[in-house]
Image (tube, rainbow, N blue to C red; front, side):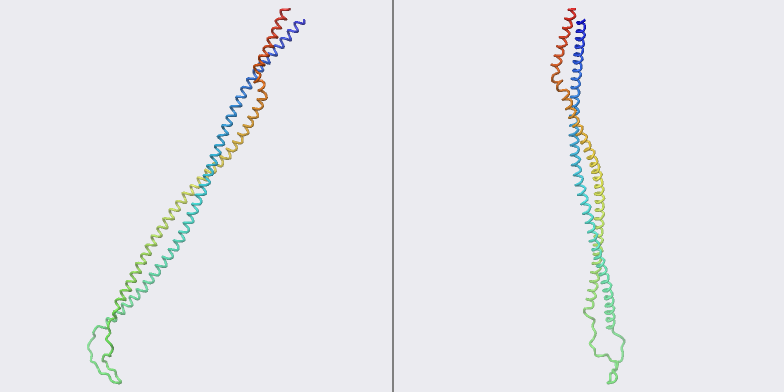
Length: 286
């Protein structure tokens, strides 16, 4: 009959309203969960962004420092190599002067020694000539025979300055030997100092070269990390952009329900109560 059909329609309406109530609650819960999830994920993404930006800044600062240190240390190595080259050139020139000095003094000593020996022999010979010889009979000379009597020459006397000259030659030879010895000692000291400088410089260059190699390895690692961090930052920016887009979609889907949830639930509940009341009336009327 007509009441039965009306009651069936009312049941359907109540069931539909109950389903709407349930679906709206589920939608509200979904919105709350998704909005909270989006908020948490967005905060985490922004935290990651801050960390990545700080890491990039640290890497860039470290790379700038390493580049400066590499350039400075490389310059120091070049300067030390230049100083070693100059020291080697100076040492070569000093050695050449030394060789010439020694050669000159040795030649001087040879010449002076020969002169000393020669003059010593001459003065020794002259001294022997002054010694008295055997007696002889003097014959008078004639206009055609000079005879064998002593000539009327001035008596020979040993050269008063002879011994002084010999002493002077000996002193010059002694001075020359001393100068040669001093030159040899100075050359040995200069060579030892040069070798020490070369040893210390080579050691320093080896240390600095190793330091540069280590810094270059660190710089390469920083550059690789910087590239990777930049890629991570780009991915992070894309994720944040997608999260904002998702938030926009959620707001469009959820704002109306969230703002009007209580009113809509109450209105629908009131409508359901009214339908149930009508159902009761119809059931009583029957």
